Amino acid sequence: MILVLSSLEATAALAKAFADCVTGSPSLPPVLLRGQLGAGKTTFIRELVQSLPGSEDAEVSSPSFNLLNLYPTTPPVGHFDLYRTSGMGFGADLEETLFAPDHFCLLEWAEFLPKESRPDSYIEMVWTVEGETRSVELAALGPEASDLLTCVVNAFSI
Image 1 (tube, rainbow, N blue to C red):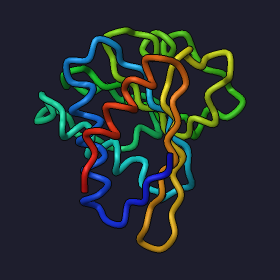
Image 2: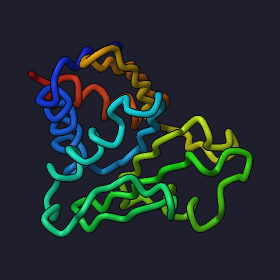
Image 3: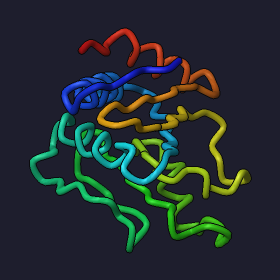
């Protein structure tokens, strides 16, 4: 499925739909985000985190230098930035957070996640930008991800 986001408000509405669907959800498949620099990945994550309970204590920024930021939201969010990990593998400490059942994980630059570290179920978001418009191609792999994506699509409105 491809969504066209023509404004920051549309990106925020998509993020809010995700936040509404993961709040209280029994399963939290990660979201793997790919796309060029400036495509809106970090903006989407910031809007999503700010839509979750507990976000008043979360300062969202790209975790480029430490690879992972944890936000004290409900559910807790693990925000990965894998840009600098190309060819380095994925450490056990990062995998621990990625596979923690109580964390909702968002991975920027997911193309650098080694295939052997990919979870069984996840949502993939491929971001493209043209002028002020962002397009997001969404796909779900696995039943938990399919359920989450169905919820998001039903909750999303601009």
